[in-house]
Image (tube, rainbow, N blue to C red; front, side):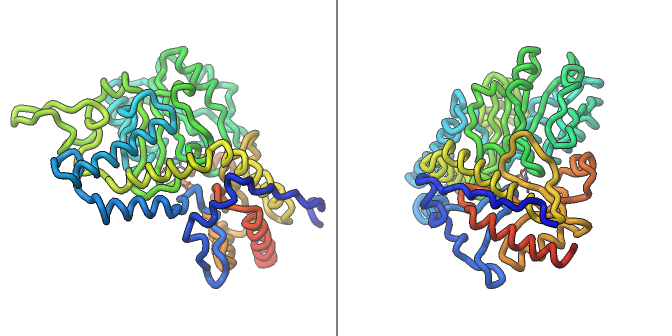
Length: 418
Ligand code: C6P
């Protein structure tokens, strides 16, 4: 028996986004003879021509090491690298460009905070507070840190719908809490956490905060000063930029107190065999030759997003995901995992006893790319009572036709497995 019969209304693609599909060359390729329907954006987004061009221009025009040469190419490369830092700062409304540190991605950014900020402050018995819906990148670095220091990891539970269960938040946030580190948007389920009250409460009690914005920065306009967080982490490759580049936002007053993450070139003021002194942030945390073209590509991605307009993107994506939830809810045997109050980016689901990898494989033969597995959220999967899910995740270039193709491919999948 069919679950519902009324056809959901697809959202109209707004004027501001009408051109975007043509900006992403990969979207015109085929997969197994079918047009590509790319719905694995939470894992990594595709790149617009503007980003590909910026990277190509760097290599064909200004390739040189940065901060080290007086020659023109080095000056130009340095300028482009630092200009991109300024674009990122503006994009998230950091108070100063020096509050943006380039890293390899969200994972390295969390590890940097663990090593350079928190470790020297921790005493045995101190606590780090995270939630049950964290990605492993916001769990394992803290576990390693706890093992080194005797600190204790505390966890905010989640409800069956996969919203934060805040009934015990007041008790979990104590004078022993030395950091609240919380995900803004869940990569596995798509939950958008209402983080502002949590950040406010921590701030009022003098507890530093970190926001994992890896799945937020591409969907929701961010203002780190308004959020009032001390740190924020994100990855370039999820925001239409190259892989291997990411950011750590850190409030300057805290960055100034922090020890280096790695030692090497470009992060020192002076070196003798007796000892070394270090540059101010951000250089203190960027040892060695960095991912120059990655930073330049990230700057171009931010220009691109800004030209389309993040508020328009957010509005459209919200409508698209509501349409997708409605369409998927109509498929017999398909169970959407989690029912968050506010959703962004992703929908996770299972289909009877079919293994999510098998669902992903069948969808792939239809040209539909999704992710299956535990999504680097094993504790969350355990809490929700599933070993793994299939996950469709959306971006600014996805269309109602993509959702329809997903739904059609899932109906075929259901015939095979149910
Ligand atoms: N999530 C996903 O398919 P890195 O790997 O450093 O770029 O990002 C880590 C990370 C941190 N936090 C959240 C909320 C994330 O979603 C991710 C990456 C990808 O869901 C790859 S596992």
